[in-house]
Length: 304
Image (cartoon, rainbow, N blue to C red; front, side):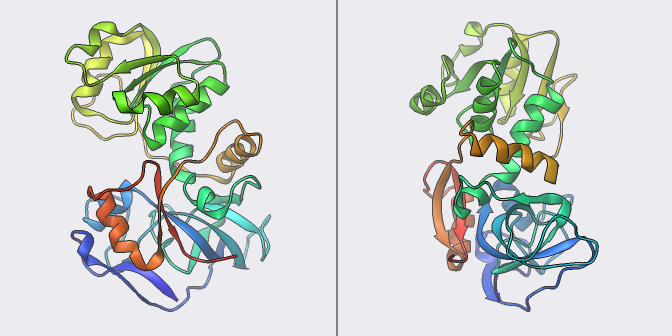
C-alpha cells in the first residue's frame, strides 16, 4: 500500500510517499481502508521531531481519517467490516495518511451520515478539541459569555458554533478579514485583534478559549471575570496564572456526540485545500506557510 512517510525528522522535504506492507489489527484495533486523511499542525510537530508522544521514524504521518473497516482485531465490539467510520488512529497521532491504517477501536465512531469522507476526516481532533475546551474544561453553560481567541481558526470556528448552539454568548477575537465567516456562524460581537489597543474594548467574560497564545492571549486575560476559566490548546510559555492547557482526547463517546451535532445540522465541517495522497509533501508545505484555502487541509486517499 502507499503511505506518506518520514525516515528522519526535518522540513516538508523529508516526506515521501512509498510502498509499505499493509498492517494488521491487533487486540482492540481495526484495519481501515482510508478514504480521506486530515493534515494538521501536529503532523508538522511530529515531522520536525518536536512531539512528546510520537515514535521515532520511520513512521507514517497523520491522525485524523475517515474510511471503511476492513478487519477487526480480537476484543473489538460494536464495529464490523464494512462500517464507515471516522476518528483518530492512536494516541501517538500517526499512521493515517495511507491507503490502510490501523486504529484503536476506542478512538473511532460511525461516520456522520451527513458528511462525506473528506468532511469527516477533517473533523475529529479539532472538533473534539473545541468540545473539550468549551464543555469539559471551561464548563460553560447557557447564558454565560465566552471569549474565543482565534475564533475563525479551525478549532475556534467549531467552538463558536458549539457555544452559540448551546445558548452561550460569544465574543470573537479575530482579524478583519474573518468577519464575514464569523457573521455567517452567528457571531454578533467581534473584536479586531489587529487594532493596537483592542483590549480596551473587551467586555467581561465567564471563560476564555484560546487557540492562538502569545501576546494576543496576554492582552485578553484582563477580560476574564473573577473565578472564570482560561482554557488553551496552545502550549505557550509561560501560561497565564490558572490557565488550563490540555491535549485533545478523542474517544468513541465524544465522536458520537459530534456525530449527533453534525447530523442535526448544528455544526458543519470546514474543509480547505484537498490534495491526493501523492501530494502529501505539498500538504506539509502548506502547513509551513505555502498558500492554501481556509479550513482543514485534507488528503483524498481512496474512492468509494
